[in-house]
Image (tube, rainbow, N blue to C red; front, side, top):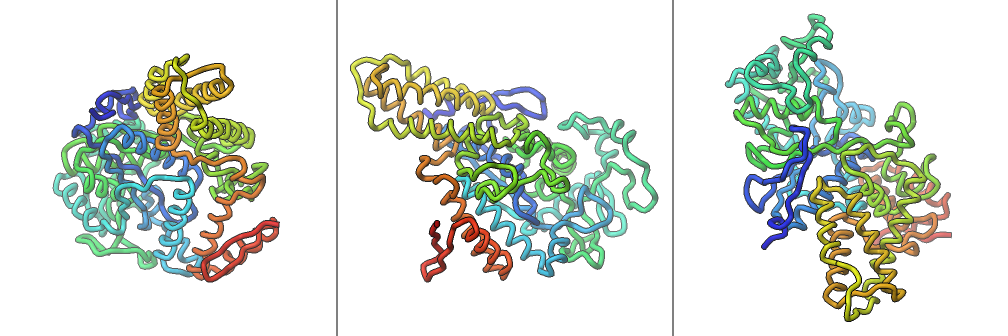
Length: 493
């Protein structure tokens, strides 16, 4: 019998606004799609938090024995922000500023994205499709929507007719917004837009002469709308109706709302059974913002090279910090919070590292089976990692009591305790077993290795200024890089 047959998960479904028992479409299989990054810059720490939450969901589903097809896309096609009628997309803008090809921008920041996620011990998704690799599918999807009467063509661009769709469907079903309110709160068109109504959104945009990223279509040489790619890729790999769609809270409207509308308009059915949204990451009580300077990127947090934190933190400490809050809660990243999480993390690791030294006894003073089920109960309750961690700390206390002779377990109970602690700590939460000695006091070897990799990527991309800056900044902090025929190593002063 599979674990998933014994453990029933409750998922908070944004669509219904309630927790629902998870029943996959096909027994034993789960299809899950999560919106990935737009690769025009280094991955944002808030995005890392979202992906980390869904990595934990992925891990738990696999732990229960489900066969999971996890699809997380890469947005490598330049889109106009918020489906604007004019302007410059972020990838093209970066390419123009740096005088390189757009796909050089895409390659650089896709590599950065993967490096960061590898550093945090993410499992790779089953499929990682790209928007540019699915232009044909997006064009075919647009054709269906036009044929079904929910889109119109103007001057080589194609727009989704929200008002027409809302006559027979519910535009706003996910975000709980009413079209009448959207109309009331939207300024009238100034006559320069091709849209019939301000609420309509682009399925295909005719490319202006200066727009670099463009593809031929029946309507014009242009590029797809932002919302379209996820509908095309999710349904291609998971089917017209699949189990779970995840993403950040900021994507609920308009992105995910538009995904639902596109799927229903093209295929006549709702695409997703369970919508999950991870909440925002704040920094010192305020939203992260480049404009205000209240921001830190993952590399800066790992290296300690920032103005917000007193030291560098190991990737697993940051991951542990994230798991101490529900994925649906706003998480405030502070130095005090990370310091407290670091202490808790090492307390848990110390207990796990004592497990093999414990001796079995004839009697058990602790009900391990009941405790084990409490760990499952926590994760079954909408992946409640904070409660799971509380149970793991309870086990850590027990380990120390057994070590001091104040508690005892039989050999069977001791083996079950070892198995359960390791499974939930490493397999489900995705933590890596390190000690204080592994991290050092101020120089994290993992962070230095990350910077070495980023430096190597910079050299491959002929960004020698960045390469030299990484070397010189590390040297200034007492870390000497040594380039050799077998790669780059480092020594500390």
